[in-house]
Each structure stands twice: as structure tokens, then as C-alpha cells.
Image 1 (cartoon, rainbow, N blue to C red):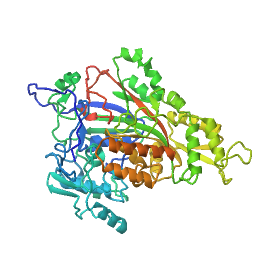
Image 2 (cartoon, rainbow, N blue to C red; image 1 turned 30 degrees about the vertical axis):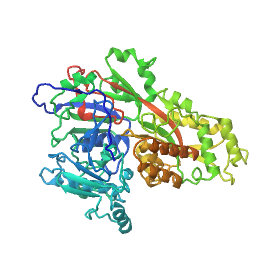
Image 3 (cartoon, helix red, strand yellow; image 1 turned 180 degrees about the vertical axis):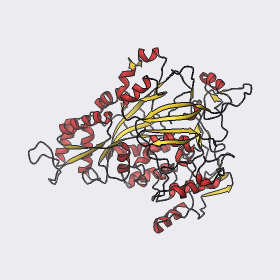
Image 4 (tube, helix red, strand yellow; image 1 turned 120 degrees about the vertical axis):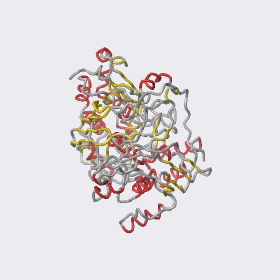
Length: 595
């Protein structure tokens, strides 16, 4: 197997005189806002975006995409360089940098605790532990020699034996881990860009774990920041981790970034000592806070794009204040999923497929893009977005609104109004009611209004289950929601991350639809054995078609993101696979208004 290669265009490497090392400025605070609270701080047990933004900074990642280099390329972060991979692709050797220490915690009894290879062995076993129910089990499941037997024993006994060695995962020395794979894996290095592979200390887990074995409220990592204060539903304050390894600002990037690289040469990371994150659910107050200067950058909600753009350009009001604006397409898809285990909308028989298909055809996807997303997106014709390898260019969209065809389909399969109340019943005469779940945001209320009209047009009763997003996430993962909207964002370049959302072994983790089809699983498993290229992508196409045939999702949209930056925020550059690089940001206090 060849190591994953990411090509680079012209890269500026600065050869400047050595400057004195500049320490983190503890007098500076980066101020940002999230639309929802984090769900927790356990890197192996979380995978929602907002927890991820924070956990990246607390725990770090094994690898990272170079922030200023384009096209993107991988480089070591916790790891000391890219993996050393054997010719057959089955043996991986990963070395970690020396002198990395966990943030201080009473469990260490006053002794600085260094990260070792043994910590990685323990951490990666946590993803396998059935008790943890890791949402990213698919990253590692079935890939390590001897791991399946260990997992089977744990399922039988109810306890995972972390001390039992396995052939596929061992520490060769204090700073070196060896993986032995059951088959070559052509995306594993990219998966390790995610914080889910970041190390935790065993003594921290054993001291603070909940009954499920998770450490959701006691984060202790080797990343650039640590938690100073967390007021649930209100704010989260991070402060620089004094134990963070000696890491400096990047030295390579595009020629256009030469000034940024020169200005920051020799500066120790993180640059800013504190990060103040406020949880502000609605977009209007967040944008108002940005305009008032209390937020340093803002990912503007699609409902407010009209407030910041005029004819596609930044408004004169914001431009006059030297506000920066970046617009890019996310490596993401927003979708509605049906619970395939639900007695009403689930199942694989023709009449169940027809019901889901009719609901999909009832939805005005063009209006959704125009009204809810303010034209900051495009209707999704498939599962894999245009930013990813495996996307099918110019694929026709079969999910556009067609009310007459939807009604004809329902009639054909026996979904008819038998009692004359204007609403259809199930083919057996029992009530037909769809429960659409949604969060409490104004954006979701607009979304629900479109769905209500769509259901009315085809004569199906709908009711809405409105709750806070973190609560819905828990219920969705447990299979307790019938019909809900989500988005999935990739942290890498390949489309495989989106296809695993339909893989049966991801049920209870990332497969919220609980889709379970042997034909799909076989295609997915075949694809994992192939190198990146046309043969593998042909299987991607076949899987995409199967998901469409069974109408598992209303595919929704591929979305654009608009970011506003204050003139005093420096170093910001949009990278498509991660929204926040807090440790690289800096503040020019001479430009920030005095409070």
C-alpha cells in the first residue's frame, strides 16, 4: 500500500533570521459564540460539531492539515511525522513527540504526567469498548488484529479487559505505537485528524468516569487549552495549558500568506491566552454581538445572510468597518433521515419505500434553499458533497418536489383517506401520523413550516417534537426519533465518511437512520479494501444509488458558510475541514475598540 499522499502547490517557506521566542499572551482573550452548548469532553464518546471544536483544542489531534498550505496536506501534531507503513499496508508504526504533558489535575498528585505510547494503546481500546458506545467505532472496528476477540469477550462478560494485549495494538517503546491491521486502510491517517483519536490518561478515566465509562465533564488533555469554567447553557472559558508542548506558529503556506508567516515566526502556540465561548442559540443576537464588537468572528447563520450581503458582496455597513468576509462550501450535507426501525416510516417493503419516497417528493427543496438557507446552498443530488472525492459531478437531482406524483404513489400503495377527514390512513386502516423532530431555533421553525405545508399537500398528518438539540442528539442516536434533520461534516477529503452513515455496524453511533441492508454492507466492506481511485469510487456510486432507491434520507442541501472576522482578528484563514483553530488566532489590541 502506498502512503496517503496529498499534493501541494507552491509553498512559501520562510528563511528569516531567528527571533526571540514569544510566549502566549495571557492578557488576550478570543471571544466567539456557538449556537448550542457542548455535549461533553470525552474524545472517544462525542462526535457533535460543537464538542469537537472544543475537544480539538483541549486534547489535540494525532495529525492536522497544514493551516496555510493549499492544496491541503497532512502533518504530524501529537504524532512525530506521518505513519511508517509496511509495503503490504498491514503494519503501521506511529511515533509521538517527546515531552508532551497532560494538563495538571489532582489525580496526578502534583507530578507532571507525560504522554506515552501506552496512553495511546489504552485510548484507542476505549473506542472498541462496547460500554463506551463510541460514535466513531467505525474508525477502528474490525481493523486491528485480535481486537474482535477482545470485543466479543467484553460483550459476553460485560467488562472490557484493557490489560489484555492484542496483536494489532501495542507500544513498542515509550514513544512508539505499532498497529497491525487485518487489511490495508487507505484513509486511516485522515481519520486520525479527528480528536476522537486524541489520548486520555487512564488514571483520569478511572477517577472520573460515569456509569457508562465516559468522562464527559473532566477534560484532561495534551492540547493547547484547558477548561477554566463551564456554565452549562451559558458559557465555556478556556485558558492556555501551561503544560502544552513547545509548538510554534506554522512556517509554510501560500505565497499570499507570506506576511502572516513572517509576522508570527517564532511565536509559541497558543498565541492568545484565553478563549471565551458564549452559547447563543439564535443567529440574530450572535450577529448583533459581532456588530457590537463583543465577538471576534462569527459563522453567520443562513437566516441572516441578507443582513450581511448586498448583491452577493459584503454590506456597505460592514465593509466600512473593515470587517472581513469568507464564503466557502462546507464538506458537509444537511439531510432529514427516516428511522428505518420505526413501525410507520421504517422497513424495506415496497409500501414503506413508497411512503418515504412520497414524503421526499412533497418537500419543496428549492424553497428550502431559498427561504431557510437564503440561497447559501444547493439542493443535494447525492450523499457525498462536491468537496469530497467520490462525488458524482452533474448527477441529476431526483428529489425535487412533485406533489401529483407523490399523491399518486401514496394512492397506489394504499395510503388513502378512508374516514373523509382529509388525511390519509395506513394501508391497513390504522392512523398515519408523522412526528418530525426539530430544535428550538428560529431556523428550524421556518424549516418546520415548509414541512407542514408539504405534508398538508399530500394529506398526511404531522406533529412536531421540539426539544433542545443536545437532547435530540441523544434520542436520535438511541433510535427514539422517527424523522429528524441533521448535518454531517467530514474532517477529511474522501467521501467514505458520508457512506458509513448507512453502514449497519454504525447503528447506535453515526447511522442515525438505522439502515441495515446486506447489499449495502457488502459494497461498503469491498470498498474499504480498495485503494483510492476509480474502482473504489464506482462502489461509492453504487452505495449512493442504494440509499436513494430505499429513500432513507431526504438528502437536503450542500451548504455554503459565511464567516465574518473583525479587523483586529489576525491570522484567520478558512480551512474546509475544521471551523475553529483557536490556538492560531491572535488579536491586535490596537485595533480592538476599548470597552
